[in-house]
Image (tube, rainbow, N blue to C red; front, side, top):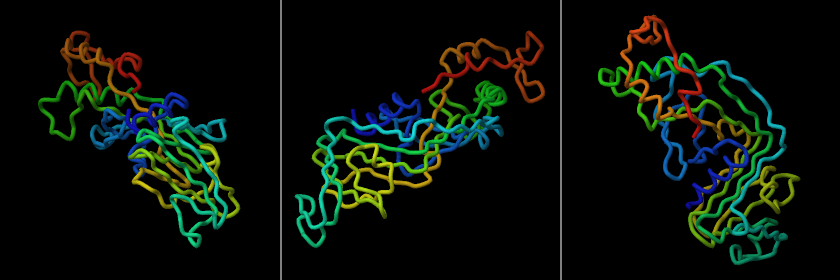
Length: 264
């Protein structure tokens, strides 16, 4: 398991939302993409651009937990250094500021913290279901940019944070220096990374971000239930006033939300 895969899985299991990787790439409700095997988000388009509709009736709530935090476990350690105190990472006394050094012993190591998470969730999907259904039935006649493919997922909820920090190792035995901003103390645990901090020098390459007002860095997404394709393949469908109806029924019909989507 890579650091990315473990990071995405840990945050989703604990908080029900996926962190966006690449870390610097915010997302929005209605974004369409595919998911890499390690959980990376690969953007493709948006539901509005592709089909002229978007998930609707956005509900906004604030999560009751002050800080979200996760790490890969004992393979991540924090050590605090006073000003002028040297280490293997910083051997020059003149460069040795007060700092925390976070050591990742594995290439699969990661640490994450976010504070003040707010959730925005779409609650109305019927027009989108109808549009995707029509796109599926017309897939042979549509240009590439208006088709829907089975591996597509779309984002229906996003999480914004007052501050979000994530550091993912790319190599084993990586040490990263972290300092506090202003009166913020040095972080001694994953949760304390949610305060105002700066990421400094490191012994190896890593992925990292510390972002105030981190908009759209967490998300939930749906893909089409494989069974819905089998149902649609049985249909003889006509377009009726922009929606779809089964021709043999002669009436508008939109499959239920539960029958159409599964969360990824």
